[in-house]
Image (cartoon, rainbow, N blue to C red):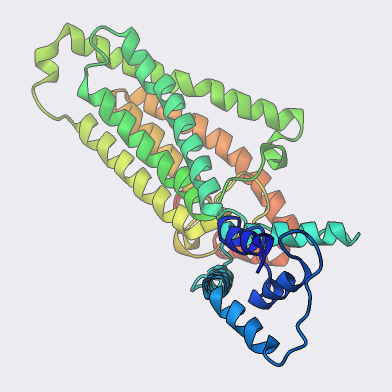
Length: 365
């Protein structure tokens, strides 16, 4: 066997890029070259076959090396195939959802193959939409922050302007009661049923007369909250011993009205469900719960809350003023809601009004 053949055979193990299929591809090549580059001379004797076999046996290590490399290549191919099978099986979890991380190489390979063939790439599988509860939670947090800011301006601001007012326990109890009242309605409704209807769909904002009525009611709120609270804090600062003597009838009546307002608002909000909203037509007419007794129990709870606040501030005149302002405003709003509900439900709403004629207080108003 010539030196070139041996060099190629031995160099095959050092350079893996040169990979003949078997030893037969290397060994016959020695018959076509020799040490000086001249063609070999075939022997015509009978012993030529035996000599060739003896020469091949002399390079047994070349054959074994090629066989070992072939075995390594086959083992690597089997391992790669097993990894591909495992990768394909991991694309599906136990609940049937697609694993996006495992599916990304397959999608990229399919897109590259489609581009090479001139076909449009396969459409990517759509992502699952985020659960609505996350958006509802964010909307509820925004509503709670807006509510806290509004109540701070309504209750805490006059306390800050009064000497020693912000340190009064009564101020913080009123703030907590108001927050519990409004959060039990709007914030809880958003968490359970989603955001409120857009403000542009509110029937109360349509038309200058309705908008003016809403603005007048909003402007009246600081009057019935700031003035009685500042008066109470001023008297308490001037005569602290008298205020520390104990609970009065004002305190008891105020606490009872506020507690009844929170309970009634919670009950009505549970009955309304997703219909607890702005002045828009609901999906169904609610006639259960407190709506069996009056048509607008939530408006009644607002009246109780504002009157209880004024009584807690030891001001009966402002409690009467709050009741009068709320009655005037909510009666007008009740007529507006009647128009919306009658347009949406027709005879069903008329029948409900006949069976439940009172608006705010059972058997009274």
